[in-house]
Image 1: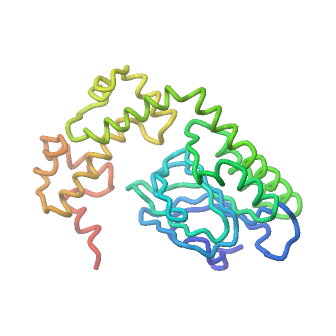
Image 2: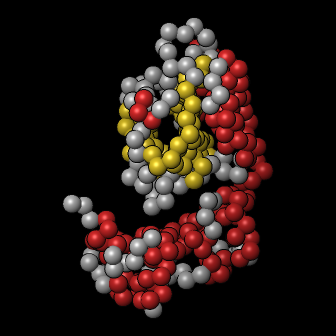
Image 3: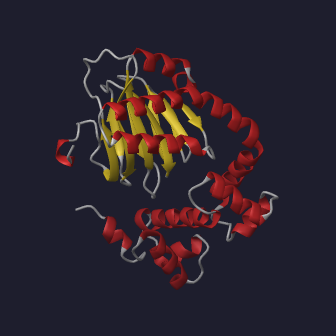
Length: 290
């Protein structure tokens, strides 16, 4: 299927994607059908809204941040988040970060698919946090691989994988909670301290000291549960704050750099350009809308 003939429910705010389409018909009699799926790297301004979608949707966040609102319930999405929605649910997804959201999805229909969804944790709560559980992403990638081939075997293979996904999600959540709760709690504590104190923090060593953890262990936690190192997380928070100063308060480059901990304007400009691809002097012009 060419890009020009993609179904209308596929967003145009996608930088790169791999899709497969197997059975989009609403006339089938099967109890478990995979309609389509794919992997999408979304644009920074990605925003999806719909309430007339006729499939069960299951999505998995590979990287980036976003917010999903499903039937009025707001969910913060991060790497490892799995979320789902029923047909005709009121849905909104908004990219929540400078770095684009990358996610997998599969769309299902049929009575068995509906029953497994309703009985499982996605049907009950809408979202699971499975950071560090590798098999979920692998299942989605296998569906994309098999689905792209098309035909009866592809339909059967993807249906088996999607059913496995629905059955095993609850088990993986329990196992993840039991075996990795302490490590994940340590990671979340690092993130919370960083988010609340990034202006005063100047290094990962300072962060590790504040949370009473070894610096090398902090780095391992971020490798396991995040898509960026702790240093890149800290820099991104600082540069996002600098952007707000430059755009909303018309701060000078020197003042903006100093507020986020860079006393040397040249050093600040280099880090800013490494983050956004343009210098702080040019940034306001590059994002100004005509």
